[in-house]
Length: 262
Image (cartoon, rainbow, N blue to C red; front, side, top):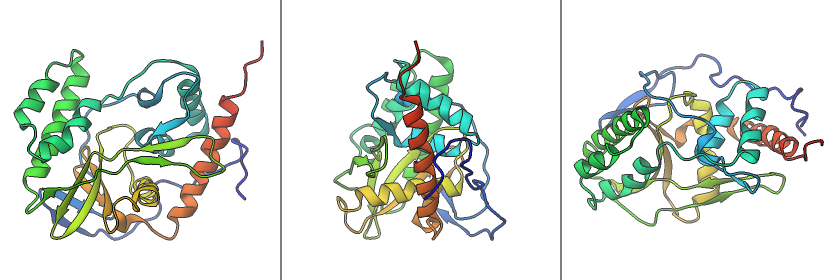
């Protein structure tokens, strides 16, 4: 059993030791399974997606990954405390993600999405959304033989000992060469998505959603680092890393939920 005291829990490094690089071109992006680096642009607030006040019960998938990526327990606790106790906030990339399946399926033209995103008032939010939308479209249009599929699965991942759930809403499902691929979009610049944490996320997605789409494979389209991270990143260590993250975050969640002293 992992020690649940926040000050004594140690998590492994998000990168691990050196490994061999294996890469191949993947329809406009590079699929990386080891040691990949690309330039990053834009930034988002880690607390925005889930700041809904005292009634908060679930984290979005993005916020769960952000918390897993944060290096310090103190930082994780601060974010969780704000999520639980401070009302307000919004998803920085909500419009982009909502349009992904429609654009890929031909229900919306890319230019219509770009025009819609140009109406965002805040400069940073508008610019980052436009950049990510263009990267998504550039990836999709080079994907040979890909056809939007259905159903688009969704659900809430929760284990009996968790004090919170993780809301799962992948933005795209498509078929290519007879294989269905459920795709989650990662548009956040900071913190940078690592292979190890991406694998943890993919295990969560697969564990909860695979019964809704039998035979489908799961992947994360990292729009910041311009790569596709697939299930091949899940290793024998991934389940233990997931349990360590859940134990720590559940402990911090319980502490942050305690009534404040008068």
